[in-house]
Amino acid sequence: MPSPWKLLVTEYFNLLDWMDSAMSLADDSLEWHSVLDALRNIPVETVRTTIGERAAVAYTDGACIKNPGGPGGWSVILVAANELVAGELPEDAPRIECYGHIPKSPNTTNNRAEITAVLAALCLAPRDLPLTIYSDSDYTIKVAQGIFQMKANPDLWELYRILLKKRQSRPIFEWVRGHAGHNQNERADELAGRNERTASALSVAAARWRAGTLH
Image 1 (tube, rainbow, N blue to C red):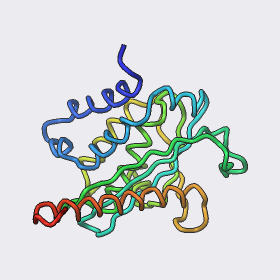
Image 2 (cartoon, rainbow, N blue to C red):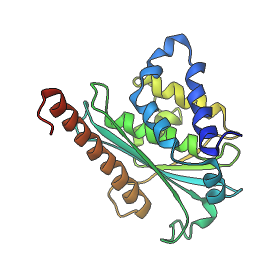
Image 3 (tube, rainbow, N blue to C red):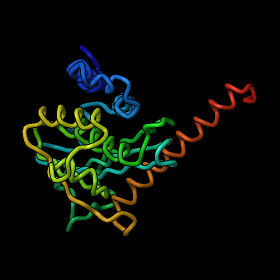
């Protein structure tokens, strides 16, 4: 029997095969592969045990050192909705923290990092449960809701639509002001920034290796 974590990764990796040939950019999406890498560390059983059977809440964030150009990072904090007390998550409440880094690329942007965090939330949250996503990206929320017309990042938005079709109900989006003392948003920002810096360090190390100066 396949291990639980492999089931999760395999399920979403196979989504790449569903992309229309016109959306071949998704095959080369650094952001999507960053999500797949992060999913390898999270067993399905852990998600179900942590979230339960009612509803899920995700706090997402994305960051980019140079916009555009990267490197970048993204993060998701997934919790059970019934753990919230007056809209806040107690410090000892169980949660899943998922995050990843996005390498330098001409296409790496803050908006793409923000969308990536939402894609990860859709992958993590059980498909049969209601999901509320908190984000400080007005752009991401309004494109996801259809308020803004999608004019950029078609590969990621196509993945968003595919993931949406796999859910029993559409997620509810809530905007939260960034850097305004919201504990979960601040933590998501910290995780995204940490991976942004990780990606930057990896890029520097790779450059030094190519130049023959890494010892």
